[in-house]
Length: 224
Image (cartoon, rainbow, N blue to C red; front, side, top):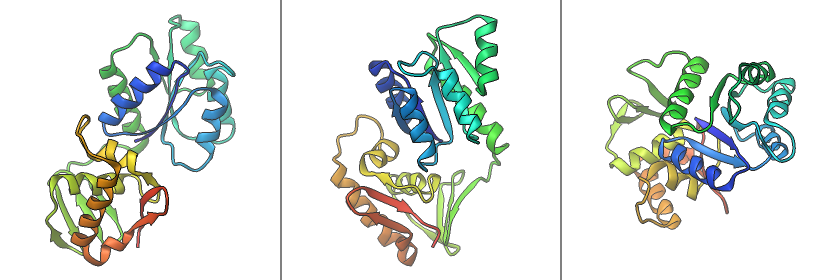
C-alpha cells in the first residue's frame, strides 16, 4: 500500500518509515496535521494513513475529521498513548478505521494494515495478477508476460517491475525504488536504479516504453 505516516516524534517517524518500507509499502511522512492534509489531497495516491493523535498543531482527531469531511476514503489507523474506552470511541467517531495503543509491536501494526487493505480491496485470489497495458505479472507464480509471451527477469528486475505495477501512474523517486525493490542494507546507489530500469525496459521490449522517465525525479508506469 501507499502509506502516509503522521508522527511528530522524528525518531519514531524514521523508524516506522524504515520498517514499513521493509514490509514492502510505499511510505510518505508528515510531522504535523496540516502537512498531512496537504499530502492526502495533493494527488499522491495515499491509500492509508497511520495517524498519531498527539500532533503539535492540530490533533489527529481533527485531521481524521477533515479527511472524511473532504471526501477522503483512505483507511485511517490511529496511534495513541491513550487507552480509555472514550478515547477509542472518539477516534472511531472522528473517522478512524482502527486504533492502536502505544507502545505497540510492529508486527501488530503490520497485521492491522493488512486487515485494512483486505477490507478495502476484498479477498485476494491465489492467482492474483498485476496488469498494466501489455504487461502481466503473476505474483503467485512469479512470472511476467508481455502480450502473453513469457519474459525472463532476474529477481531484482522482477521486484522493480512489481513496484511499478503496484503504483500505476505514480511517479516513484530513485530512493523510493531502492527502498521497495532492494533488501534493506544492500549497498547500492540511486544511480544503479537507472541501470536496472534500462535492463528491465530492454527485456520488456516495446512494452518497456510504459516505464516513463520523469526528468529530475524518477520513473512511473503507464498503461500504454
